[in-house]
Image (tube, rainbow, N blue to C red):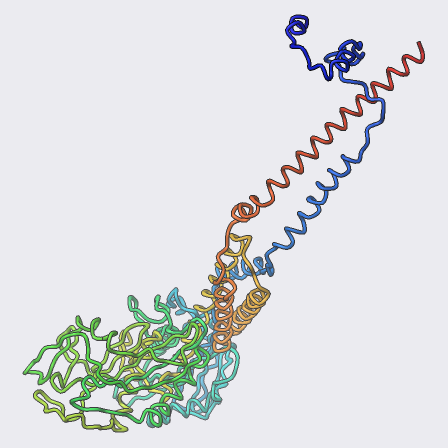
Length: 617
């Protein structure tokens, strides 16, 4: 084939003919005739190209940790183990508050009481503790008994109450209940010290034939007046202690504190009480009030009593042109317009009632609205009708977690009242105080207590003394205990959610401030648990509120809420289009150069071997 191709080769130009003929006539070199064999390498291959390529690859490998460091996310370590440990402790040992029950039997007969009688009564009362409801926050209850007569007094071995023997006698129970309540308070040493709370129930023998009655005081004591035997006395003591002191008078099946109701307190522990006076139609009449002087003076004791539960601020305002959004109908028999209970959900006119104007409600604070609604002349007087057909005595209603409304009919208001053409008037001090008393009762309901008590299940006449604070001391203890338990559980749930969120998002920024808030929250929760074990309800409530507030602050930190976090796969998807092509070409070049170096080195080794064989032959 080569010869045929040579014959068919066209003649070359004459200008280079001599040169061409010399090339054609020269003999072929030895290497050209070898065909498939690589030419031998007579010199050692250099490493300059290999070193240069490897240095480029090495620079990329060294820069990779620097790249990862520059894109590293700051994550403050969260104490996940401490959070899990706190959760396990609360699940295995829910918060409970130990307390004491001291029964005092005042007998009017002569002679000294039998020493063993107090121990027998103590054992009889202790057997009634199984009647405590499962939702009760009471822990270990220590029972003690004191029996006092004209000849002296004796106490059981476990008596721990600061009862001053002889300071109070059965005859003192004939005094006014308010006087006897303060007398018992002084005989018990005030009862406001720190530590486990002791509740005292006094049995005062009285054979005047008026029957037996029970009075529950404003502090941590109650008394029974009448002729009762020991078995009946033990039963009454257990009922008063369990039903009211431990359960707040909430019956089975009723809603209230410890029955699934939430306290109207913001997650930061702040509550704003906003009081509004609404003039439905100022063309008829315009009313104002002296809330600054009278209202705040009456509400100040209430605010101070609830201080361990919430930090309360009070505001007031007067609004005009605020008609209701529900309908009422005229009833000539009742002499006014009637609003049925079915229309209450539509009473609040959110479009016209601009109530949310508080400047104190910041962050996650809770605002409770208390509204005095003054109807217009054409719908005055306006009455609230109960489901049983009777008219409401307070003419008011509440909306859970929102607040309460009082429908206030102006004096002299009647069907067919004539318009006063915008005459400006003012609520009297007595009218304002009566309205505020209704609001305090509504506030009690919003916090899970009853606005007033009835003696269901007591079988005897029962009277409850009203405190100027709006809450008796034993009611405040109940609020403190339930508020501490609720906030501890809410704190743990928030911390667990935060820990799970951080673990599920590896690229999530966790600031040092968040870690510090979590640590402080755990410290406050532990302090609340320790106070609960000691039976200090108010201190436990304060610590639990702080623990929940810190946990909420950590969970809703601005650094968490303002950034959208992506997965690791998304992170690589962003950087791979920039670095993968360059890195791949550098890596392939390094591999190719390494293979070329090995081939050249093999050629040189073969040349050396052939030279050594030629020398020996």
